[in-house]
Length: 126
Image 1 (cartoon, rainbow, N blue to C red):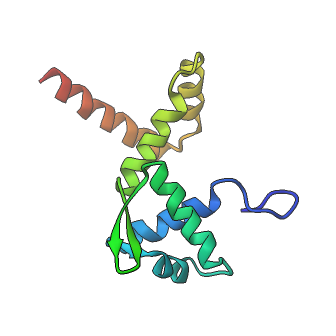
Image 2: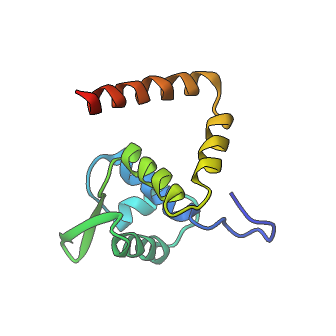
Protein backbone atom coordinates (compact mmCIF):
# COMPACT_ATOMS: atom_id res chain seq x y z
CA UNK A 1 0.00 0.00 0.00
CA UNK A 2 1.38 3.41 -0.94
CA UNK A 3 0.35 7.01 -0.37
CA UNK A 4 -0.43 9.54 -3.12
CA UNK A 5 3.22 10.56 -3.32
CA UNK A 6 4.33 6.95 -3.88
CA UNK A 7 5.61 6.37 -0.35
CA UNK A 8 4.64 3.36 1.74
CA UNK A 9 1.68 3.86 4.04
CA UNK A 10 2.63 4.18 7.74
CA UNK A 11 3.01 0.83 9.45
CA UNK A 12 3.23 -1.19 6.22
CA UNK A 13 6.82 -2.30 6.75
CA UNK A 14 6.19 -3.22 10.38
CA UNK A 15 3.16 -5.25 9.31
CA UNK A 16 5.22 -7.05 6.67
CA UNK A 17 7.95 -7.90 9.17
CA UNK A 18 5.39 -9.13 11.72
CA UNK A 19 3.70 -11.29 9.06
CA UNK A 20 7.05 -12.94 8.33
CA UNK A 21 7.73 -13.58 12.02
CA UNK A 22 4.25 -15.01 12.62
CA UNK A 23 4.49 -17.28 9.58
CA UNK A 24 7.92 -18.56 10.59
CA UNK A 25 6.87 -19.70 14.03
CA UNK A 26 10.49 -19.53 15.22
CA UNK A 27 13.01 -16.84 16.10
CA UNK A 28 14.56 -15.21 13.02
CA UNK A 29 17.59 -13.03 12.39
CA UNK A 30 17.33 -9.72 10.57
CA UNK A 31 18.95 -11.34 7.52
CA UNK A 32 16.33 -14.10 7.46
CA UNK A 33 13.52 -11.57 7.82
CA UNK A 34 15.00 -9.46 5.03
CA UNK A 35 15.11 -12.49 2.71
CA UNK A 36 11.51 -13.41 3.50
CA UNK A 37 10.12 -9.89 3.17
CA UNK A 38 11.73 -9.69 -0.24
CA UNK A 39 11.55 -6.62 -2.37
CA UNK A 40 14.32 -4.12 -2.23
CA UNK A 41 14.46 -3.51 1.52
CA UNK A 42 17.97 -2.89 2.77
CA UNK A 43 19.27 -4.93 5.68
CA UNK A 44 19.58 -1.72 7.75
CA UNK A 45 15.92 -0.93 7.14
CA UNK A 46 14.83 -4.37 8.36
CA UNK A 47 17.16 -4.09 11.35
CA UNK A 48 15.71 -0.67 12.23
CA UNK A 49 12.15 -2.02 11.99
CA UNK A 50 13.02 -4.96 14.26
CA UNK A 51 14.65 -2.63 16.81
CA UNK A 52 11.58 -0.38 16.81
CA UNK A 53 9.28 -3.37 17.23
CA UNK A 54 11.43 -4.50 20.15
CA UNK A 55 11.25 -1.03 21.72
CA UNK A 56 7.44 -1.16 21.35
CA UNK A 57 7.51 -4.57 23.08
CA UNK A 58 5.92 -6.20 20.04
CA UNK A 59 8.82 -8.61 19.57
CA UNK A 60 11.33 -10.20 21.91
CA UNK A 61 14.95 -10.81 21.06
CA UNK A 62 17.98 -12.70 22.27
CA UNK A 63 21.62 -12.67 21.31
CA UNK A 64 22.61 -15.08 18.54
CA UNK A 65 26.19 -14.86 17.35
CA UNK A 66 27.03 -11.25 16.58
CA UNK A 67 23.39 -10.24 16.22
CA UNK A 68 19.96 -11.08 17.55
CA UNK A 69 17.04 -13.28 16.67
CA UNK A 70 13.51 -11.93 17.03
CA UNK A 71 10.08 -13.45 17.64
CA UNK A 72 6.57 -12.03 18.25
CA UNK A 73 5.37 -11.46 21.81
CA UNK A 74 1.79 -12.36 20.84
CA UNK A 75 0.33 -14.63 18.19
CA UNK A 76 -1.35 -12.95 15.24
CA UNK A 77 -4.95 -13.23 16.47
CA UNK A 78 -4.07 -11.93 19.95
CA UNK A 79 -2.23 -8.98 18.42
CA UNK A 80 -5.22 -8.18 16.19
CA UNK A 81 -7.57 -8.32 19.19
CA UNK A 82 -5.24 -5.97 21.08
CA UNK A 83 -5.36 -3.52 18.18
CA UNK A 84 -9.15 -3.67 18.16
CA UNK A 85 -9.28 -2.95 21.91
CA UNK A 86 -6.80 -0.08 21.46
CA UNK A 87 -9.00 1.41 18.75
CA UNK A 88 -11.84 1.59 21.29
CA UNK A 89 -9.79 2.71 24.28
CA UNK A 90 -10.71 6.06 25.75
CA UNK A 91 -13.12 6.89 22.92
CA UNK A 92 -15.98 9.11 23.99
CA UNK A 93 -17.95 7.65 21.06
CA UNK A 94 -17.42 3.91 21.81
CA UNK A 95 -21.08 3.19 21.12
CA UNK A 96 -20.90 4.78 17.67
CA UNK A 97 -17.62 3.03 16.83
CA UNK A 98 -18.96 -0.39 17.86
CA UNK A 99 -22.24 0.26 16.05
CA UNK A 100 -20.46 1.13 12.80
CA UNK A 101 -18.13 -1.84 13.16
CA UNK A 102 -21.06 -4.22 13.73
CA UNK A 103 -22.95 -2.75 10.76
CA UNK A 104 -19.92 -3.27 8.52
CA UNK A 105 -19.68 -7.02 9.21
CA UNK A 106 -20.95 -9.45 6.62
CA UNK A 107 -23.65 -11.83 7.82
CA UNK A 108 -21.31 -14.77 8.50
CA UNK A 109 -18.96 -12.63 10.61
CA UNK A 110 -21.92 -11.10 12.45
CA UNK A 111 -23.28 -14.60 13.21
CA UNK A 112 -19.86 -15.73 14.44
CA UNK A 113 -19.54 -12.66 16.67
CA UNK A 114 -23.01 -13.32 18.15
CA UNK A 115 -22.01 -16.92 18.85
CA UNK A 116 -18.71 -15.89 20.47
CA UNK A 117 -20.43 -13.26 22.61
CA UNK A 118 -22.91 -15.92 23.76
CA UNK A 119 -20.08 -18.23 24.75
CA UNK A 120 -18.29 -15.42 26.60
CA UNK A 121 -21.52 -14.51 28.41
CA UNK A 122 -22.12 -18.11 29.50
CA UNK A 123 -18.53 -18.35 30.82
CA UNK A 124 -19.01 -15.17 32.87
CA UNK A 125 -22.24 -16.51 34.32
CA UNK A 126 -20.79 -19.90 35.16
